[in-house]
Amino acid sequence: MRIGLAYNQRPDLIGESSPPRLRHPAEPTAPDAYVEWDDPETIASVEDALRLFGDVIRLEAVGDFPSRLRAARVDLLFNMAEGRSGPNREAQVPAIAEFLGIPCTASDSLTLALTLHKGRAKEILAFRGIPTAPFVIIASDTEVESLDRLPYPVFLKPVWEGSSKGVSAASYAETPAAARERARQLLTTYAEPVLAEAFLPGEEFTVAILGNGADAACLPLIRYRFDVLPDGALPIMGYEAKWVWDTDERLTNILECPASVTADVARRIEDTALAAYHALGCRDWARVDVRLDADGVPNILELNPLPGIIPDPAQHSCFPAAAAAAGISHPELIQSVVRIAWKRLTGRELAAPTLAGAAA
Ligand SMILES: Nc1ncnc2c1ncn2[C@@H]1O[C@H](COP(=O)(O)OP(=O)(O)OP(=O)(O)O)[C@@H](O)[C@H]1O
Ligand SMILES: [Mg+2]
Image 1 (cartoon, protein in one colour):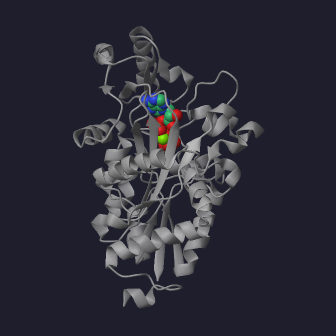
Image 2 (cartoon, rainbow, N blue to C red):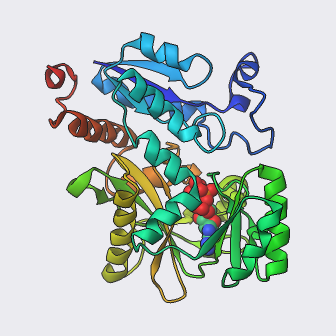
Image 3 (cartoon, protein in one colour):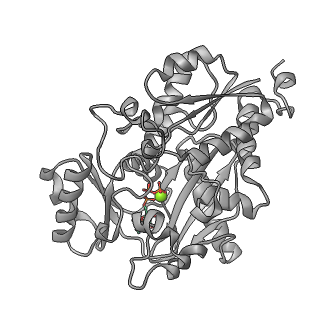
């Protein structure tokens, strides 16, 4: 078995000769531009886990990736590549794999594009009757008047970013005037539309889901403990909570897993997250962010079909934390995704330690 590993490694953490190769005139230069890309340790841990199944071929998703992927002649591509930039970046690798006829783990390009654009995802959820906060999308300065239609307070974020880029206390606006100002700032900084939605005042959970069809199931729920944030901080998982304050000792326990909620609340959160997973056509695995509204109803914030998988527990990566609570180690999690994908692709269980039997 030959298994490809498609990834993007943060340029600030790789050898000095590498960044110029990654640069592209259209790529952003903001300091948080590459925060979604993976660090070398995460990529190496996935590579090690994949070795259970045979030869692993590293395929950095930059430059001549399409020709390297074709030349690698892999039986399966494990995709953890976040892509270059723009609204289709997460869809690029699965689209290339599909074009080349190479089976790939995780969601397809349609789902990855739809979920990256939080507004498109919310339109689908709303159409399907899955709760999500009322929202507007502002594509330019001339559209800020639509902010008047929302119930206040509101929350504003760039429409196709992740890892809390552009999400901070400044995202919270109590008046249309404040919301307009923030929308203009975000339009200038990120050069992409802004999503403004009603601020959900309740508790927040994230739901790690593994599987396909009727087999899709939730790992133990994670609740964010906003009480450990610095005094006076807005109760959100913003950029500071994820990347600045995360080394603060007080944040050690920010992930509560399993979440201390009643069985009824847990079931409603899981049902909503699974409904969203299926509505957006997610495959193999995804993490769904959920927050309660003023009435305690679970609302979908967004879906992450390429979930963060930093192996070091000190970094509070949610999917590995939920897996650990279920007794699943980091390598076992990665191997589970391969098995789930293999079953989806072939209809058969994957015979470990090699795929030779299953592929025959
Ligand atoms: N409508 C809202 N009401 C309250 N809080 C919100 C709202 N939207 C976002 N947030 C807060 O901001 C955080 C980041 O938002 P969101 O999950 O949409 O961004 P992201 O950058 O895609 O996150 P991820 O790191 O999961 O990719 C949420 O976890 C939540 O704490
Ligand atoms: Mg999120």
